[in-house]
Amino acid sequence: MTAKSGFIYVVLAKGTNRLKIGWTADSTLGRLQDLQVACPFPLELLAVLPGSMLDERKFHARFRRFRVHGEWFEASTPVLDFILSLSEQGFTHWALAATGRARRSRARRA
Image 1 (cartoon, helix red, strand yellow):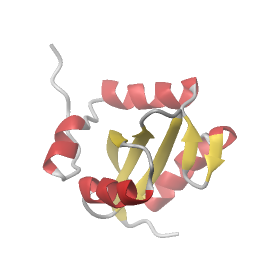
Image 2 (cartoon, one colour):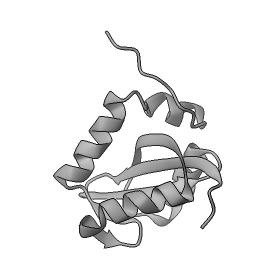
Image 3 (spheres, one colour):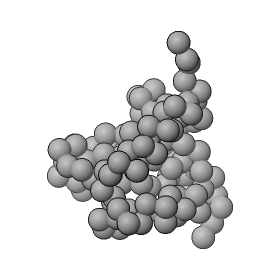
């Protein structure tokens, strides 16, 4: 397993209770577009944070009891709470998805 840096992302298959936790070394928007080709449901990028493939595997292990298939997980309360905590920590995602670039971004607090 490589420690190559990149981005861990969480994608929601709209209309389902399924989330994909994945990793990419490249553009998260590009990865989302690649995934969309093979998915019958519209996909929405929920979270992006810097990390390695090893970090991604740690998230998979953390949520293994909610695994549905491969890198797809049930959108359970613990998984959704984790995603919310990312937002609270300042790992924003809407701006990242719009630019096609993932980078660590601190949300402005009102």
